[in-house]
Image 1 (tube, chains in turn red, green):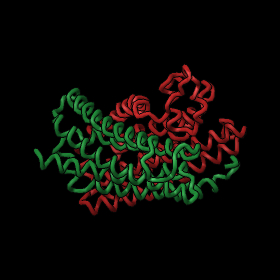
Image 2: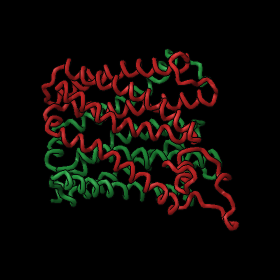
Image 3: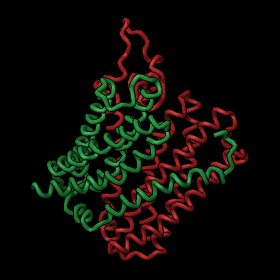
Length: 215
Length: 190
């Protein structure tokens, strides 16, 4: 993942970005690399996917340790996929906007920059809207599933963890864009997978940090 | 896209997509919170442990297949028809292998983690559940994704813009559902 010139990283970038075949078809003893061979696709993807799964086990461990609470209050289980998914969505919006602005030369990591401020305000507004709705919906579904958690608590969990996530999304996106730009990696290829996965894991950690305090 | 949109513009454009994935997420959450799923979680140790990894791989495996196919279409090296083309079949077979291998891998590392955490799990049950859930996900995701990409492309839709939401939405909803099916099937066998 961090080795930009590595064989695997090159091919991985091909799998996710519209790189042209010509880039990689450097004649190797006259034979071009077959980007569509089963073996090559599998060999490239498996290590990446395996590493990702191990990373995700961190959130799994947190979930497992909260099993009792989760089974007692189904509203929290309802909250889980949405919370993680929305964080990922907000992160990918933030990242792709920042990288576009980087290319257009309108990017500067300061709040005085109107474009960056617009991104940040939009992410917080989206987070406020979505996590408010999520809180109410999760509460209602939780009650229907036989839970006993009150509306104010579910709403508080959803909003508090959601807004903390929004802070994380903003900070992580800016840092990821900065770092990959300075290291010389194309932020379009690197930031979204890194930040969305980080937000997946952090989403669970934050959610259960808040649950630990509130419930 | 010009980089000078106001916060209001960004909000208005992003909200519909975010809301669609919210509905999908709530649906997945409802399955997760259901009585049947909760008793499944209770009876098979490790389900919560493997849940995030299992859901995340859907994006990794099928999202990258979508990106690959859409690049191939744009380059003109694959045709948007359901014919047996070597590149197309290779990409599909490779995704299937990836999906199944990672599912079994997740079951094994979940078992090991349970063991390290001092718990007890059944390797047979975890592998069985992941094979069933991984296989059903593969069949569904592959057929829907290819149909959406090809039909969309022929109607002038850029597949790059639809793959993300399609994979996330389907992956969330059916990932959790197929996990439930897996728990049920393994429960019947054992």
